[in-house]
Length: 224
Image (cartoon, rainbow, N blue to C red; front, side, top):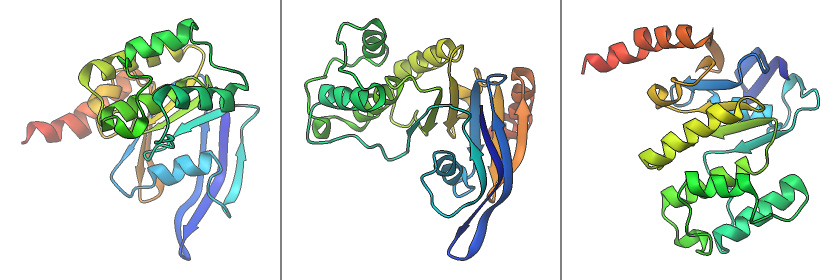
C-alpha cells in the first residue's frame, strides 16, 4: 500500500499540487494515470518516488518497494543493452543477472530483444524504450511506475507488454501514464484523471472505466 496524505508542492512560489490525498493498493492493481500535458502527472509520480524536495504532507510506503521508469530513461548509452540489464539487476536485486532465468528470457521474447550486445546509443528509440522497460521489470518491485511507456513501441511489443501486465498484476501494482487510453484502458482497474495539479476523477472498476472512456474519450474521436 502507498498512501499520500495532503500532499502539496510548489513551483516558483506558486502552488501546483495542493492537499492531494491518494491511496494505491491491491484492490486495483493496474492504475491508469491520465490528463493533459502539464496537468501534473509527472510531478505526482516524482513526488510518489520522493524525487522532489520540500513538499508538504506525508507519504507512507508501508514497506512497499517502488520502481520507476521516467519519460526520459536512465540507460547508460555507451555500454551494451546486456550491460544495462546486469547493472540495474545488481542495483535492484543485489545479485548478478542469471542469463538462464525464465523471467528474464520471457522478457527478451516478449520485447523481441535479440540485440543484447549492441550499444544502447546505437539502438533505435523503440529498442531503447524496450531495454528501459525490461530494466525496470527486472526489479520485480511491489509498485512499478511507468511514465509513457508505450511511446515508440511497435504494436506486437505493446500487446506483449499488456499481456505481461495482466499476468504480473496478480502480485504487483502498476501505475502507468499514457495518452493512448484505448490501449491500457482494456486492462486498467482504476483510472485517475489529473487536471491543474488536482485529481479531477478517480474511477474504480473495468466497466466504469469503459463507460467513462466511451463518454469522455471515444465520443470526441468520433467527431473527427
